[in-house]
Image (tube, rainbow, N blue to C red):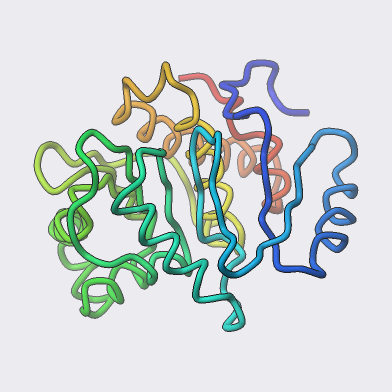
Length: 239
């Protein structure tokens, strides 16, 4: 079983905005997890995407389809550059962001792996890996001095200027599909909490550390585990 102590990243009410026809599919998938997950499912209608009364926004995981409405992509980019809502962007949605400034004091985080970072910088993966700190700083500068979580061995956390931190936890099992999505979701849950918004750098580093520490704990206790196991453990490792 997971350890008894958890640093809760649950933001409260969670809304999934889905294309029409997918709502019932996702509801059935959520039921597979018993009564531990409760989400609101809303239709995603082009031209009618509105975000109201939210405390943080995560965009990207599960959005690799080439049939997504352009309205979703432009709305994501507009919010990145204009909204005061804390935002975390990952996976496919990274390609929807355009370069430029973001609102002063806004909370912005991107979580690319080396391949995504290379694409955003018009570089090769080898070039990104040759100087990961420089790549992180270049990404941050491109997207409004946002926080960057550059994933990989010893995931880096930082901005265009200032200290870049290397995370000591994690292992190769985090390379399995869905692991990065889980990190992005855990991080977005922390960003939704006002008390942690005032300690932003520490909260981001903690999310990355906790993600890796949970993977290390699982690998120490089991030869094989899946992302659902990681979801049950994350938040449960003490510093």
